[in-house]
Amino acid sequence: MKFLEYLKYLLIGMAFGFVLVKSEVVSWFRIQEMFRFDSIHMYGIIGLAIVVGIISIQIIKRNNIKDTKGNPITIPPKDSTQVKRYIIGGSLFGLGWALLGACPGPMFALLGSGLTVMIIPILSAAAGTYVYGMLRDSLPH
Image (cartoon, rainbow, N blue to C red):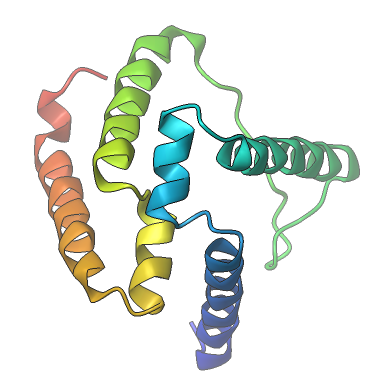
């Protein structure tokens, strides 16, 4: 990959992190409000993200949009027999989100905004991912 491609992704990531910080999505207090059902702020942002995702996927499917290398973008259908796995994985993700007060994207945004304590959750998440990779063949899928 060329340097300019890395620079493009770095700039997009920085812009996304800026939006996360300014919209207070990375705020521990906003996340706690959400889990206590005290505020609609986070639910509004998540709902908006879902609507944007639905519209974007429909535009991609209906216009046969290609990726940056000219390959067609294909979105395989979900396997409905794997619902149990989605529920368990989603519950573990939500538990980690509630305990930490941040999900993976905001962890990097918080680190970038100067909250260096986020190095610990990022390293822990990387270690968890590594352990999952080691145990993946032994786990039910």
